[in-house]
Every structure is written in structure tokens, then in C-alpha cells.
Length: 394
Ligand SMILES: Cc1ncc(COP(=O)(O)O)c(C=O)c1O
Image (cartoon, rainbow, N blue to C red):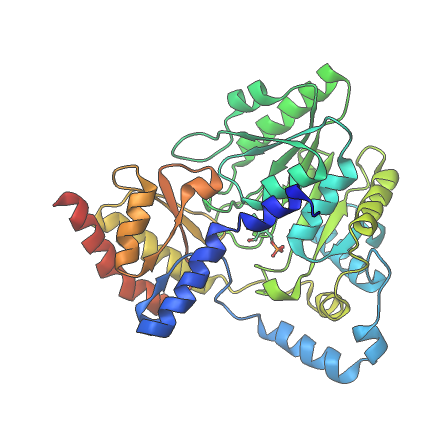
């Protein structure tokens, strides 16, 4: 007999993946140019040329053992030191390679961080809207998963609601800014209020509450300041990924950073190593680690995303849709004209416009559009958005 729990995770497949499969099948019938697929957060901008060059150089000039062999479980020390130096330069931290643990992207980083902190009975809070895998990762790690509703219409943290949700069993608050699916960047004031609240609750309950900061979109911000949360709250574990910032989602590369200022930092870091071991990760891909070592200072070209954001947000609001202005990531939340997202997605599907209902992210009433797509596709899709709204008005 198999595990019912794992069967459940496998059988209930992701709606986003289902839409993507539908899109590919439909494209084979009517042609790629007539599908307006806004479902998947797969970066459309290719990896920067420095990254492509580093792959070429690594494969051509480095020894096969360095490129294809195992690294130490926590990763190649040269890579970890390079990441630490870059963090110190940018955020004034005091991190060394010994605080960095290389992972297979943010997904693995999150799961490892959650497992490293978990003790029997712990609860994990996150703010709505959120990346749906949080529920799978945290519940399978043992946590009771508790989403906390954010401020309606801005999707900034609601401090009063967060305070209500924290109990003596709260171990982790999982934050994601810039946010998937809203594109919202949490303001420094809000994050300071969150930090104050967690400090107060830690003192009240006499045990540490941690932040896990999920930062795959850290580099994708279009003017708004992305606060580095460990600077506000010392017991923060950072989970980072190069999937979005360097357009490498299939290479599976990221890291966990346990700040040296954290309580029991050395032991916590070993718990991270233990979680990676227990989960069977062995080590992050060696080729990708070598490339990251050479490219830690490479930042994404934001211009294509800014142009897409401006076009999509500008046109949809001009037509009459209500949208949440995204300061970062590459997602736009659009309100269903009558609040019924299923109906909105079905109407759009008739025109081959594919969107994800916000219920997948605990954002009822909204749909998510991933605008990491071809700019021309956005242009071609606009008349269909007009026709969809006309249908509501008719
Ligand atoms: C908020 C958030 N966290 C984590 C992940 C997982 O990223 P990775 O591909 O690095 O595992 C994603 C991917 O879309 C995401 O949007």
C-alpha cells in the first residue's frame, strides 16, 4: 500500500500546470500565436549573456570532476563565499560561506528551512495571497498551516490580523516580497511593524518565532525598495533562488542563508544541513553552482518586465479592469468584473486567453496574470480583454 498523504499531493495536481498543459495542446491545434497564455511564471527573458558565457566556459575549460562531480552537501565553498561577499556588500551583513547552504532552487530551500525548524505541534503562518506550494511544503514537514488575510485591495500585511493569528504554537512566519501572485512589495513600515510584533510575541510566549523570507523575486523590483528582512528581524532565514533573477528555473539552484546573528546560528545551520540530508538532496547541481560562483554580481535586465508591466497594467486599467499595481515580480492581479473568477477565466478561455483563478493563491475575486511573456503576445491579447469586458457590460 502507498502513502495516502503522498497520493493526495500527487493526485491533486496544480491548476497552473493543468492550464499550461491545456495551452500547449491548444497551441498545437490553432497555432502558438493565437494562444494568450498568462498562466506560468517561467521567465521569458533569456539568461543574461554573462550566465550563458559562464556555462560555456565551465563546460569547456573546467575539469569534468569539478563540473559533474559531487560537491560537499552544503555546496562548493568558493560559490558560498562569493554569495556571502555579495550579500555583505549589498546589505551590510556579516555572512560567510559557512552560513550559506546551496539548494535546488527556492522550493528545496523552503522545505529544508521548514524542516530545520520544525518541532512537534508547531504552526506556520503566511500572509495571503501566497504561492500554493507553501501549504504542501509546510504540512508535509509537520506544521499546521495557517494563512493570515492581508489588507484588502493592497495585499500589504494586516498587522491586527497577524496579531490575532499568532499563538504559543507559532514557530514560523513565512514572508514573500516581492510577492507571487500579487507583485506587491511590502513596505518597510509594514515589515518593521511585523518585526516589532514578532519580538513582542517571542517575549510573551518565551520561545523564538522565526521568519522564513522567500526571496526568488528579490532582484525583480521596478522602483520600490525591497527591504532585506534580516536587517529588521535577526531570526530570519533567507531562502533565495536564481530561477527568476537569472532566468534559470530548470537549473534548480538557490540557497538558504542562516545569518550569524541568529539565535544558536551554528546549531541551526547544522539543522539545515541535517534537513537537506534527511530529504535526500545530497548536493545542489555542481554545474549550476560553478556558474553562480562566476555570476554572483550579475543582475537581471528589468526593462522587458517593466515594459510588459506598463503595457498590461496600462491597457487593462484603460479598458476598465481593476488591477493591483505590481511593484515587483512579474505577476498582475486583476479583479473579476463580477467577483466570480471561475466565470471570468471561462469567458477568457473562449478567446484563448488563459489566466489562473486567484483562489489558487488565497486571493478570491482576483485572477493572476504572469506577464513574463512575449511583449507582442500582450499587445495581441488586449482586444480580447476588451471583448471579455463587453460581454459583462452587454
Ligand atoms: C514565491 C515563490 N517561492 C518559491 C518558488 C519556487 O522557486 P524555485 O523554482 O526556485 O524552486 C516560486 C516559483 O514560482 C515562487 O513563486
